[in-house]
Image (cartoon, helix red, strand yellow):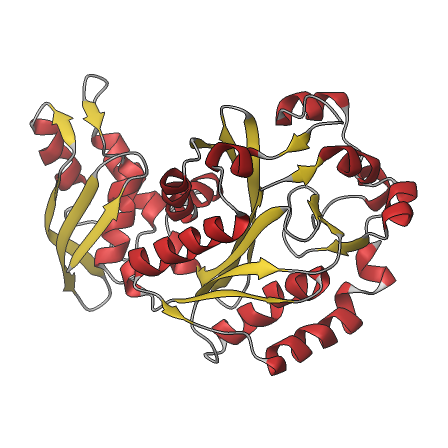
Length: 353
């Protein structure tokens, strides 16, 4: 059995193993650990390998990582390899965790629908994937109306200025994921949703899974000229400040939605009339003046939003051998019905008043 895992910011960890099945237990044997990492002294590799030899085959990635950690000594020097990476490689070798290459992806752009329908599709399309009616996918949103999308656990009154909402005709949507408010006008940001099996992040902490699922978009940003870095827990930032943020929802059906919104060219003055942003948060997010635009992607790339989206779609398609998918009218109608029964209701929007 063979498993591989590329440590984010590190090296490839490869684990080959066999499983001995007894009457009551299954144990690991013939464990071989390799990769292009650096490790001193050589004996550390033997100790890490031996820590897994004879161990229960039903261990979690965290339990395997704990065994490896306990085998290490304070003087050991690991570069590009982590105990957590070994645990994930083991789970993949045993067929308990997936890699990107195990998933047959669609890549989707649009269609143009109201923001609330996009929010609803994060739930309805994820259900379709879990029930086998659709492949896992990456979908870039398009929308036609101004909106603020607030996090599942945010208070409406604490986050929004009602006068600004009314002044600009803003639709307020509460999404299924946590995180902060997103100010969305047509063409002012780039938002995508990724629906994948949770087995893809098996063994990763929540914090690690954010960066792991956004590795592809960090590469795509570099291609279009954005100097970006990941800031734990869930922010993408540049030298000029925050570019965007990610959020996740994991479902009991074994699938999850991970989505990101990145600023392209946001009217910060209008945003501050709509979203309550305190002084500390303004300083933290790099919003220096209410009269300036938040435009890291436009100013750093000099590219039209459409060109950036094309680059994102192309990079994801090439990296993961994805095929082009689509959203049908039937899909939209299902999402519109979910809006009527859930997302547009007073009970959902004001569930935290």
